[in-house]
Length: 145
Image (tube, rainbow, N blue to C red; front, side, top):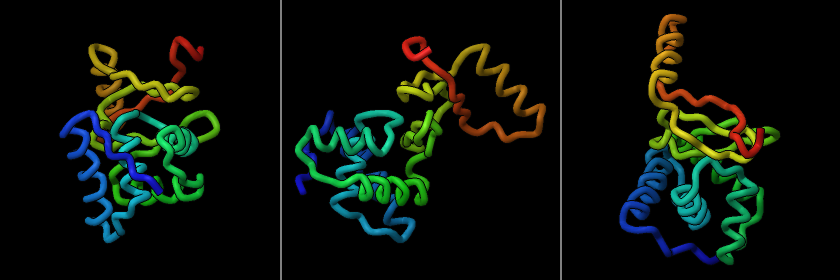
């Protein structure tokens, strides 16, 4: 298996290390497969397992879909990524990126949820007794609507 080694800079390398450290902290192994998946997740947002596998294959990294699912599940169990429901699958985003956002259920496009709409939504959640953690609203983007 080839491991992707080209990063968009030192920030990306640090983000990959943070994901792998979350695995170690949860008592899980830091494998080459986990590193390859982490490298893809750092470069893209809210990918499904199939999309991760396609990005890996585009870089000549051979990894079967079962392995990609296993790595994503381990990363989610370690709290490093957050599963986001999409149409018939689940997208994954890095937990530290989980600010308030809108996620297209179809294509996985992510947009920040800010301004008065976000404030109103958070106020409604708080009034209903919910904690004001990161809010992800599953919707459809203009392209997929």
